[in-house]
Image 1 (cartoon, rainbow, N blue to C red):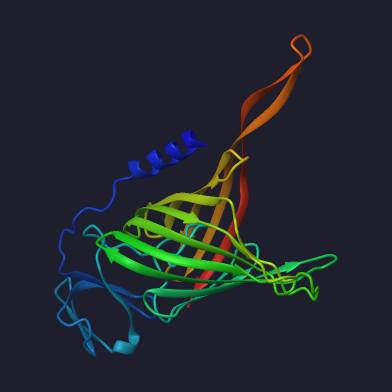
Image 2: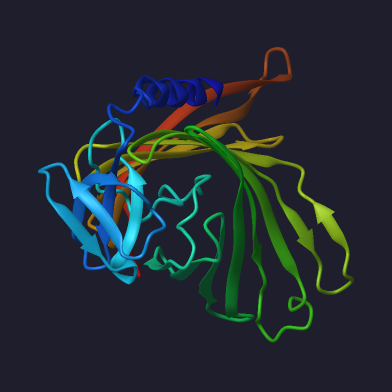
Length: 304
């Protein structure tokens, strides 16, 4: 497990992180119709917004037509990833932006809403079939609590609340509080998070804390204005389990639409007790096993 985690971190950190911007005065101005202009802006809060583009032309836009005014990244224009608040499965320390709404399907329908520029809320609807089945809504909230340069820190939690009609289950809840750090810009970054578990029983109201936690390790490298390579990984930290899983894949995206495809590479240790009839003792034999499969999943997202 430790070798796997060390290798994953080494690969992600090998991607160079952010360099200083070549011209900090330049801005990328994205309009609501998807048009993009690069130039200087005297007053980013003005209405109308006046942009002197790099070809020397002065352009004026009503503020209602302007979606984004932001610095260039490493001195270049990059179309930024609309699914910036998560990798494949793990959250990043970024938020989607105030007033933004994103619809996704990753095994279940999901909606994420930017309550402010630093706080997101989300809801995912799962459906459990068979006896005792019902709706399993997963509600989440995440906030960026600190940001300096290219380092962001966020805290959040997701809560699973079964709605099954079963009195012994209804009223129960499982919460997954987490913290996450993202280092880098929106085109190249490393993501590290830690998630715990807290459960509440519906029958007696008792609250219990999980014995273990999960460490998430991931990263992203944007190749051009529409393709990003992503590595998402998880390392369970709990007694009695030794293993890890990585989810390598690709994200194809435009101004608002994104499509993910990813696979899995899993490593785990299999411990087997072997009986020696000569000594009449048991010994433990450990064997490291690896399996990989692709693709195992994908998602479709659209940001309004």
